[in-house]
Image (cartoon, rainbow, N blue to C red):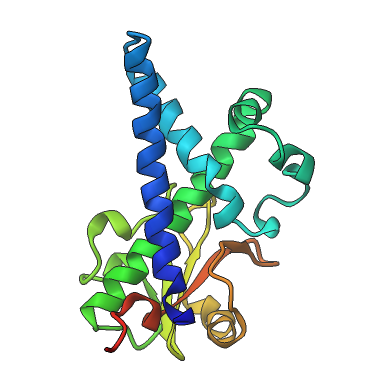
Length: 200
């Protein structure tokens, strides 16, 4: 059952996001308030950013996001530092998309035999091949793990030089949270078995 926790967590987080957006819309309708595009984007940012406490390892944001900051109500966090909150939302979106990429791979049953750009994964939906900054991921499937790496906002990530690091991560990482490596690359490691139906 432990192997299926990642799938359950991903499904729960997506549901929380949808419920959060729906709740904001419901409150607005009660107040007879109309959303414009900017306000819709803000509501989505709030919903996604709120999940960062589950999605992101401390290494992603470092000292810029303290325990004191995390203890504040979500709306206060956004109002106090909108730039940081939006950055958290971008990292969290990158993590969520990486989870969907891994799910597409696991369900297809077709895995690359080397580290590869997500642009070359035809079995993955096009919207799941790029991170929140519209950059492709680097992906390695090995030892039953799906290692998904992102450059964040730093542009195209060369995959082949990351092979040895990805291979090590495939056996040494238990958490599925998004982490920042010493080389500044973002990574999440998920397990193939987590996306498969349990055997009866």
